[in-house]
Amino acid sequence: LSGDAESRGLHAAAADLWVFYPTKEVSLQRIFPVMQAGAIPVLYPSKTNTHLFHNYSPQREHGNSFVIQYPTAWSVFAAIVRAQENYTFPYDWGVLRTAVSKFVL
Image 1 (cartoon, helix red, strand yellow):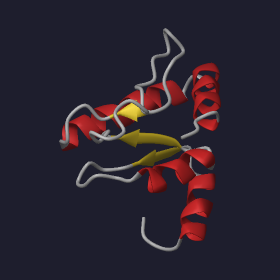
Image 2 (cartoon, one colour):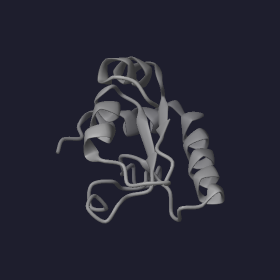
Image 3 (spheres, rainbow, N blue to C red):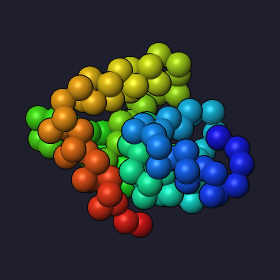
Image 4 (tube, rainbow, N blue to C red):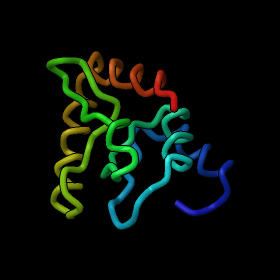
């Protein structure tokens, strides 16, 4: 999403999910405000931030994002499907949103 930081923040605040398509490395300066606004990131971690983002597991109630496993369209689709499946369960989605809201650099 292009535009200034304020307009991106407004969009992120209205979103439940934010997909960072793996065409190029996304900086933490673009991911962190989205998470602060409450949107759950779907992303392909870069070499510098792999340790920060963990795929959400409803069984363990652990994770802060939906991780794209490979930089392909099918992998992006699979991550979005996992996110949609979890969205249908309010308890799981609430646990995930809490984890995202506690995310700090």
